[in-house]
Image (cartoon, rainbow, N blue to C red; front, side, top):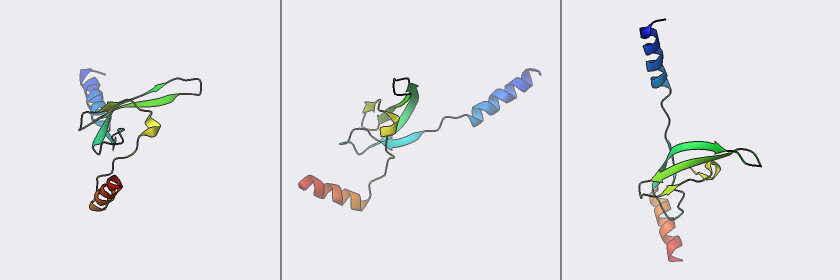
Length: 90
């Protein structure tokens, strides 16, 4: 097992183990921008392990919410934009 073998293993590991990027809704309820999950980790607690995530959005918000509270980002459609405008008027 020479250096070539080790280099090929390292190169294939890097190619197959790229992190996936999660796109979620910004945790700020007033922000319509998508947010990216930059990091995930688990902290122990008396009720069992709790997963957290570090998120950042296009508007500059940074949050560290519980991973279970993250919701998928859905791009606004003409219908949802009108519905949100009507809700703001009430």
